[in-house]
Length: 383
Image 1: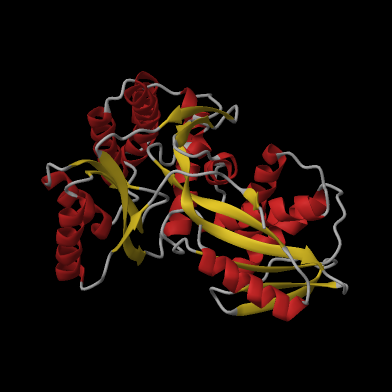
Image 2 (image 1 turned 60 degrees about the vertical axis):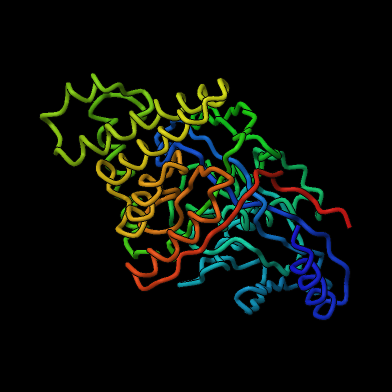
């Protein structure tokens, strides 16, 4: 738990609002495997991590709400009566979106104040946006006793992102952030929204994230473009989503679509199979198999779905060249962000040092290393 962050948020809140808030901790997430399968109603395998957003919230004694981001050092005051998205509003739109989606349900909330901060690097693919959305909806639910279930809350968070941020994300990020458990990953079916909790014990290996510290500007348009391709192919197959397609089905319509669209669809079908194989591998304590599936996933993301980038490919290539790294892949939407790596604990310090130097040499940029633990989902912090 980031005590310095909590102290900082508390100090700012009390100085500004002269009242004592309640605190919500909402984690970021990793996804072991299953990338771009969620909006195809497929399978994903995420887990909440010990990095996240901490939000302090309390009722306001005025008619206005004030939001303070300590990371951006920005403040924003608004009325609950007029909640349009702000052009280039950044973090504010995630919060306004959540409030608007609660109001759309016919639920009335009164004015409130918020101070928040986090230790998730923005744009790293660890879903700082879902963590922020969840912390807000969870906080408002606690503060005003709205009686929302966790499942209702994650759909509010998701709709906020669709309608206020303009990213048609699947449900995985919000789900993992809300429902995560310590030392367990969630084998999530994105059609039924049912998850099976799978114990994670990597034995002599550990999870290490390497952040490229790049974010290529393609990401949002490319994301929506990939989604359209998937929907188009599903409708050609007369199925609801690519989750229902087999490799044989795709061959039947191969002549009707471009090679690029065929490969993108094939990637989704194969990635869904890999998620199910990864769950079996963990149940059988076969960590090496899990690693192998990660490498296969990256290969698909790089060469079939084409959402990787030079920096991500470089990091995965270096991982593959080192026998102490049994699996690695890009994680998240793509075009930057992090790789997730399964590395022998003994060899981690050397590998991390070596890859950091090589990355700097090649790109004249620093990569960042994060050691993450699988942790609890969104919850109220006991003061």
